[in-house]
Image 1 (tube, helix red, strand yellow):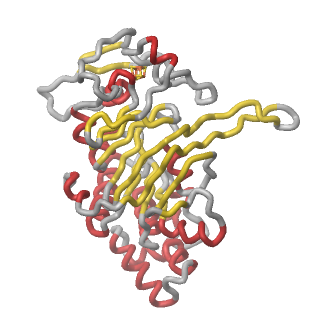
Image 2 (cartoon, rainbow, N blue to C red):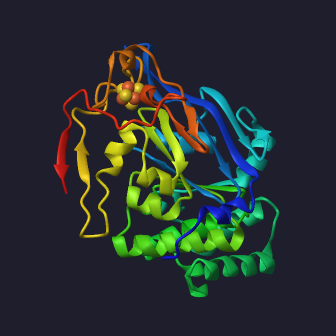
Image 3 (cartoon, rainbow, N blue to C red):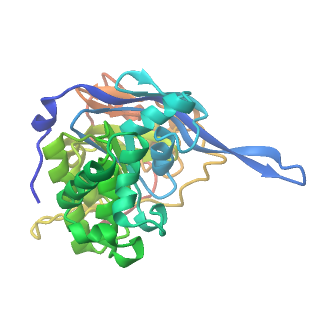
Length: 352
Ligand code: SF4
């Protein structure tokens, strides 16, 4: 696979996606009349930007809210609060024709393409449908464009006549990518796009996404729990924990010097490809708390090996502690010396 550099992204600094204080709270209902008795705080005040031509990786454990962020940005589910801007235009509350127009600019590639592909439509029709619906191409011209898209994602012309069940998992994901590309979107949200695939096929699909990005200067929000994949494809990475972003920085800095204790623990589980090197593995104690009743103060304090009294009472704000490096942790307050943290609670530590 070809390695990317942050410099490639710097050529086009336009902000494609700007998310500010995004919230998605799902009501919890009970009783005969479905009375709301609480909320699941799935996404609770998330802010980040994605620049043109870059891939922002969004990582975190299962249930942290990362896929809900993706679906809310796509307006597949309605946000509770906050703001979503695509190329500077507010789309948080748009409806009808305006939403339809913005949907053209944002496409999603799902984890399981099979469930998102109409089993009764041929592959060619699936990809051509959007071209026709948006009045981009019809008839022979549509066929020509679909053929070109198939060719670009590594599918053959004869595949256009096949149905989704006749494809392998990797081919179906290529079909999903072709469909996403058809409308030349400003942003592609890739939600765990390779986690259901075999490892060898994962590499092919990741390579394809990176090649397409280079060729068409695509912008990706890449959602995954797999840090090795995210490290490979992303320029910057945002780490999520229990509905909040806790750290954002470029991938090199994050993997060399994570500043948030949660990022530190997550990254300690990633194998180092050099067999002569060892990394201290931090195994966090306890389960992720329920998003229905998240902990007070810093949400990570129940599992954080460095937690102090202040962490239980006061929520740490996201602060830029170094250029482009944003962290939400009291121990990393602006102006604080870059100390080596001392653990205050037991965390299992193992040498790999
Ligand atoms: Fe840990 Fe406190 Fe920092 Fe939260 S604010 S990550 S509990 S040290």
